[in-house]
Length: 391
Image (tube, rainbow, N blue to C red; front, side, top):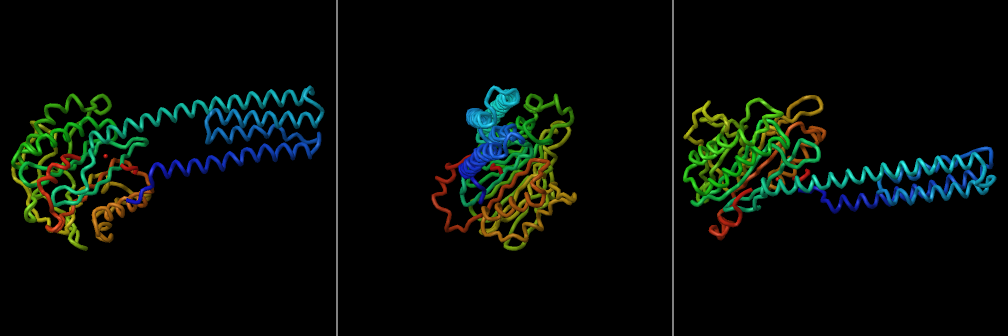
C-alpha cells in the first residue's frame, strides 16, 4: 500500500537523534569558546544548560546525563580561565547547572518510562487486532481481497468497526462488515461478539438469512455483558452487511442490516447496491422482526465490491464537507483491490487533514477470471476468517 514500515521509521529516528546529539555537543564547544574569548565581562556559561535540555528531547536519561556532565566539565574549564573555581559567581553557576541538569535527566527518565508503557499498550492493541480482526488471505476462493482499518482514537489500532471473511461448507465465500454504535476501545466487546458468531456460523448455516439470525441471537444473548453501559447508557446496536459470493458463476446476495450500501465497481462505473429489503441493525432484539429475504446481485470477473463503514462517508474536510466516496472511487484507476485501497487511504487522509473523528474501514473484493481459480478445495480451507495499518 506504500505505507512506510516501522523499521524505516526507526532508522529515520536514529538518524535524527544522531544529528541532534551533534548539535548539542557543538553548542557546548561553541559556548565554551565564546565565553573564554569574551573575557570576564560577559558570562555565557549558564547557556550550557541548553545542551542537556536539547538531548532530553530525543534521548534517554543516560545520554542526557552524559551530555550534562560534559556541560558541567565545560563550565569548570570556563571557571579556570576566569578566576578559578572558588569564586562565588562560578560556584553558583556550577551548582545551578548541576541542579538543572539533574532535573532534565529526571524528566528524561519519566518520558522514557512513559514511552515504554505506551509501547507495551501498542503491543497489546496489535495483539488484540490480530485476534479480533484476523487478516484475511489475499486470495480466498475465486476472490482477491484488500482491506484497511483506521482507528479514530490516538495510539489504538482497533475500535468499533468490524470486518471478516470466511468460507462456507458449500462453495461460496461469506463476507461481513459492520459498525458498532460509538467508536474506540469501548466498542471492542460488541464487535468481538458479532465476529465470533459470524465465524462460527459461516460454515454451519446453509442460507444467509439463517446466518444473520444466528448472529442476531448471539448478539442479543451477550450484548448486555459486553456493552460498555457505564460510560454509554444509550442504545447499543451494530449495523452490518453480510454477503454470500458463490464460486461458480457471478451470483451473489447480500443482507443489509442498517449499514451504508456497498459500491459495485465495473470499470469506470460505480453503482451503490441499495437494499430493496433492508433489515434493522443487529442488537435490537425484541424490538424488531428479522428479514429473511436477501438482495441478489452479480459480481462478474474483474468487478470489484467496495464495502466500508460510516466513518468513511461521514469523514469531513476542514471546511465541514463530507467525504464523497462514490465520486472519488470513480476518479481512481481501479486496476486491483490493492491499488484502489492505496488511492482511498491516501485521499481520505488528505481530505480530512488526517483528522478522523470516527473509526473507518475498507474491504475491497474482486472476482478473478475463472482461469485463476485453482485448487478451490484447498483455498476453501486456507483462510477462514478475517485489523492497520496505521495507518
